[in-house]
Length: 275
Image 1 (cartoon, one colour):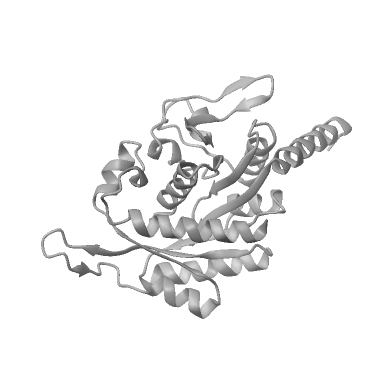
Image 2 (cartoon, helix red, strand yellow):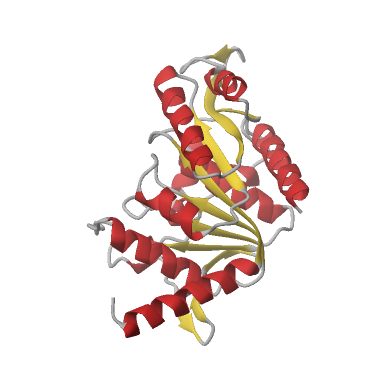
């Protein structure tokens, strides 16, 4: 790397440090495998914190499959340049979003990148974006323990911790256990495990149907010595709301509303203890 490149990198690192200093709490949402509802949890965690009055940013580092903009109803927006840097997309009061989806020409455009390019993009999202003063930065990462979550954990040395999302069945829990170990090896605090898709309340008989089993996430948390943040049941309307860009936390009459708010309360308590 020549002197010019070194200088540019040092300048970017300086901007990252300055931006991160304005963000009180940084939390990464992880999952060991896909399809467990990690992005749904991340989006609604951020939305719920913003509803409570916190200033929240979401950083979507799922480079190959970014879905946060769709779930928040801002998929047709763009990030603009200002004198202070790249401006995040405003979702609502107190909630802003940065995603590579805002930079793609069409929703169908694939991102065909190797690790170094993804690392560079994440650095730019942290250093060149005008995040401003935030109470929380929620990072939605792709499933697994590859380039993107590793890059985030290395670039943000003062992450408050990781929230790990799983479903009850054994194959998901096995991968969740690996994700806990990933965080521990990187010396990232594990805030806790969320068991998503944990039962379906029959709309007719009102009894619980355990489609994917139950307690796999709770048992993993107990065995690994981490906090069990709670269960989120299957709410049939969540899919339709997400497709329309609507948070289920904006609709109190659903089975996931109270469990998610309880989880947000625990994460708030964790952050409060961190100072």
